[in-house]
Length: 417
Ligand code: SF4
Image (cartoon, rainbow, N blue to C red; front, top):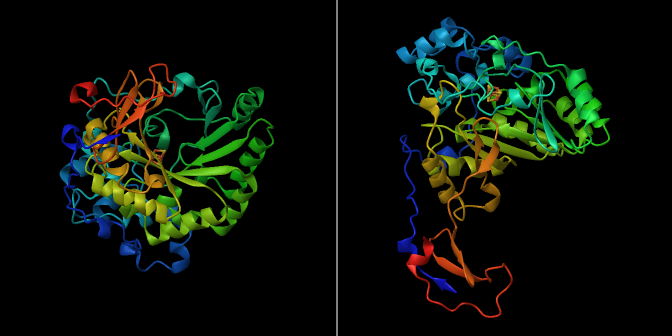
């Protein structure tokens, strides 16, 4: 049974992002170009070690390469190396629009003075990882899987990083993973069937070191599944070399989760790098963080998830930004996240619709958050509504058994509450 009750259902309208972004423009693949580095040789530019060596890490470099630096950014950059280091690869830096103070790429990697403003509810370890760490560098939060922190370094540093207490080693955390102890713990716990390598960024390790680590983990009989969480294909696509892909291929089943927040990050170079991983048989997923004036708009997020599919990447999660200290200026609201989900589900390919989650503050784990599609469950029926706001009845008895007869009762608005 179907009734058109669309006027009764509150479906948030699609909002237009402040930048009046045009969906088709957002979905175009462009090259990052060479920008200030036009005189650098092709070989150097495409060498990931050159990119790392030439990262923007100082206030002086930032002032030189981004003359439109605002007072808030300059003040933030001066303090950055006491909290979370400043670091941006030349490749990724070229994606910043110097003419736009609110450029969505700029907001993610250029420090701001607001990072020093901390609310009482903000935390340095918002997901409670340290309290679930049996040995240094290993987080055992869920029953059958562990997070294996490999390094505290990244190719570029995201200003909202949930692990900013340890990544870049600017806050004095003194992170020292002990691979022997981490691997021994996994070997001693047969319930661990899934190991997620993260950090910092595991793909910053040399091929040899990474191969050694993956081989040792693969040698543990109960480890069924390996995953790598990385932002390298986005910050440093040059790192995804044919040699790296050939090595990774030997450790299947191996999944990779990348991290992209805005469609502009998906360049020609990134699409090719992701293609190399996909060709090596690596299933790819994407994790986004919902960020204010970066991607907190249905239009931008829809372009992102559709563009990810074109890069052979399945959108996996949208995270509500964790309550990390000094991130209020980048946090969007849960209402905005729900509005985005409302505008994705049913409005685009199911494969493009990620799960929106809040990592419960203090270590409760990921909790999925969804617009309400089940309007009520009462004697004889479940009332559901679809993406168009139309209401449907699914006949079911109160104890969950199939009905002999549909309720055939008029759907009343009062039932929805
Ligand atoms: S790449 Fe990941 S770990 Fe590194 S700074 Fe960004 S969010 Fe943090």
